Amino acid sequence: MEPQDGRAARAAALDALSRRDHSSEDLRRKLQDKGYDKAVVDPLIERLQSENLLNDRRYVENFVVYHAARGQGPLRIRAELRRVGLQGALVENCLGAFPEWIGSLQKVRQKKFGARPPELPADRRRQVLFLGYRGFTSAQIRTALGFDTNLGTDDEEP
Image 1 (cartoon, one colour):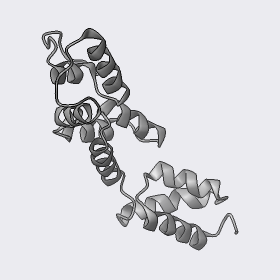
Image 2 (tube, rainbow, N blue to C red):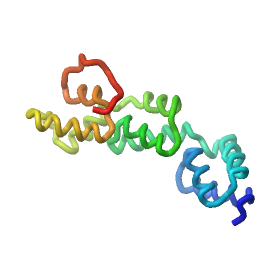
Image 3 (cartoon, helix red, strand yellow):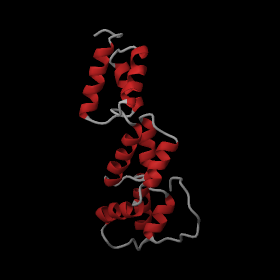
Image 4 (cartoon, rainbow, N blue to C red):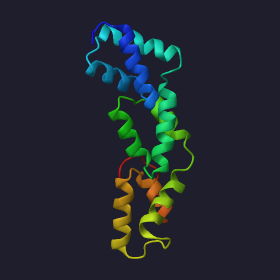
């Protein structure tokens, strides 16, 4: 493999994209890890974006929908997206556009703990900790579990 070979870099990028969608930063990192030069990779990434073969918005939207369907909340999804190099307004807009956080939270809670709401303080605490680990905000957890919701909203971990 030649580090300056643009055709080989494009073939490697298309091979990676044929398997699954990638963010631009993720694909850039993969190509550089394979040994392709930064001077070849950066223009290639721009070209793939202009051809709409690589689209960060599409990647984030699909990522949010997939992980929310797996029972993960917005805090955890945001952290995972940050791990692959995506953050800022694009991520916030896609997280804000997902309408079913409370419904997703309730499905996860029912799957783990059953249909009955927690009655004992120890059960409530266990459910709150579990849902917090899954990445739901404390405001979402309070709403779903029927706690006092007059405490305001937040985006912090419970």
